[in-house]
Amino acid sequence: MPSTVIQWFPGHMAKTRRLIAQRLPLVDIVIEVLDARIPISSKNPEILSLCGKKPILTIFNKSSLADKEVNKQWIAFYKAQGQHPLFVDCKTGTNIQHIEGEIRSILAEKIKKNEEKGMAGRRLKAMVVGIPNVGKSTLINKLSGAAKAKAEDRPGVTLREQWVSAMKGIDLLDMPGVLWPKFEDQQVGQCLAATGAIKDDILDLEQVSSSLCEQLRELAPNKFCARYKLNIDQIEGLSGREICALIGKKRGMLLPGGAIDTDRANRMILDEFREAKIGQISLETPAMTKKQREVTDV
Ligand code: G4P
Image (cartoon, rainbow, N blue to C red):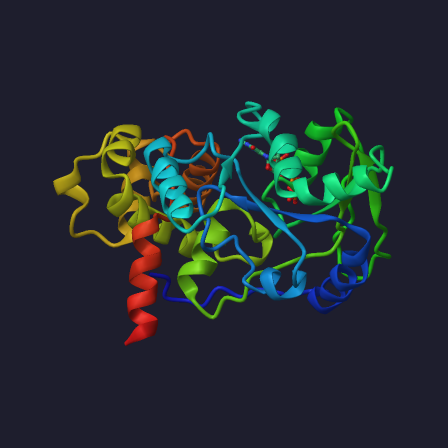
């Protein structure tokens, strides 16, 4: 795992927390968006306590970038806990059509009460939350069928809420704040960095890319080796940095004088992973939650 600590900047997290608490009474349900490739790392464990008794629909977005088999494992894992996981993809449109039904099913009692009070037409309100880059704005645009400005999430910028009329009878509140999971755990930092949740300009890309190579060697050796024409035995004992250099050399990424252009190789490996050119790969599996529990239980 990474030798240098990945720095992260909570930004105006406290402000976001306040904003969520303030706006919570206005909504009927919270839609929590996670990245299907990293369901553990993209989750903010505070959401549960922040939302109190408000129902939460958890959506696993970018599922077309994740390993289909691992998606199935996650679905079984959450179902075994009595949850209704919804794996969607905003780019391909996968399962987007089920979101409205899921919201209505979770809010069935509320809808019935509205009908009994003669307020059958009352619009339902949902708040969309999640860490940066999980696809919150894309999801809202997809559901509303409109291209609209992205909610501002830069520190220091006035926070402005945006209500969007999305599905029939449902309004979405795009939360402009930044929400981060707590991560003392560097594995979480690495997963967030590799998937692009943390902005590249504050990262040591060589570190992120070489750690990613080690993760891919372990999690998806066949896809990784096929993409870069590597032999698994050849990379078995190598460090992540050595693997990156080998890939750069194979791709002919050389500087004047013949040294390997490792910066270019690092950038390329990260870009290709994020675009799923290496294949559909999940960085986290349900087995890892067990391992995590075992570590904490000790
Ligand atoms: P955020 O509001 O949570 O910060 O995320 P946002 O919607 O801005 O999405 C972040 C990036 O992820 C965007 O790519 C977006 O297109 C992409 N994205 C969102 N949902 C999905 C999905 O389900 N599948 C895939 N494959 N990609 C998704 P970008 O490169 O930053 O911008 P662009 O490609 O839209 O120009």
